Length: 401
Image (cartoon, rainbow, N blue to C red; front, top):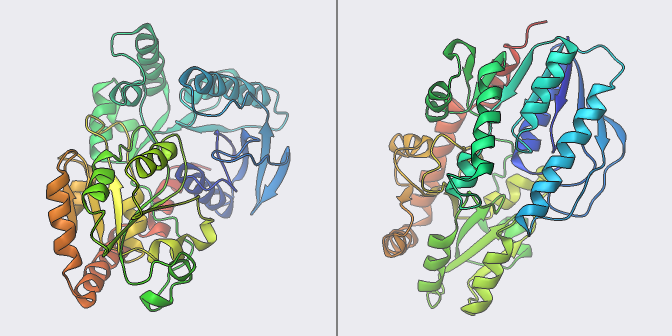
């Protein structure tokens, strides 16, 4: 089967959607399919520009130009999304080789609509991988108003994609229920969680970790948030906890990654003169396991009102790499499901700053042996439940040759 994938991000981008999509595309090639990816020429979170055409592990990657005004202003960011969608659509429309199936993700927003139109023109099936849902995420994040014209037309487009896709890939039970409520045919939905994307496992001694040594973490308890700093991952509770603990030399709060809220972390740090906050850029996928292992506990955040609309998958990497996790977000959720099946991890809701401080102090009072045991139990759970090979094979199996 000749599969055309359309997406904003792809290898070598390091954001989560890129990594998971890269794994899937390469596994499709290994299964005997021919895969072409039409994507952006611009990196998601830096100024890198990628080649117009390239090949990686059997996948042909063709890239397009579009506006690239940055992410600071909503209207300019929306223009970037629109021109990216149109450029990818035009590129795919005039693709000369045979296409048997069009596959799209939700990045950028509403690319699925262009994928659906393309599939109708080419008279082939359209598969849609639902990573998040709009306009719900934009509304819950305060970017647009619920009763606005933008929200109204966004719902119409979103419902069209959901109802007309030949197959929908949902990430958790909350998202599946929401898709059904919006008109999706349950028989067309494949519910499959994403997988840990680390390419290795650091099993060395804690204080011998290169990332820990390089950044002089020393013997402090490192509370790490690693990933995209987006509107859907509110960091206020974590930042306030860092402020309350500013005089407790045992703690260091490390923020790794990039995104629109990176500046919020910097501003908060400078405003309160916090020496217990350190920031790092996105780390290469090849060394992701080392930076994660440099932490003592990994932070996973889900915004209020966003259950079923998005799916923070940092928890899989944290557990797979043997780290305890700290969940900040609403209940119930897919993360709370995992939390209920594990022991001695931390869960608080947004705004529970002093509850979080109390639990972090309790965590810090544990012995290194006790903390190591939490991580080991998490890793065992992840290996049994979120095995990457099994999860990828499950999705690949739904692509008929």
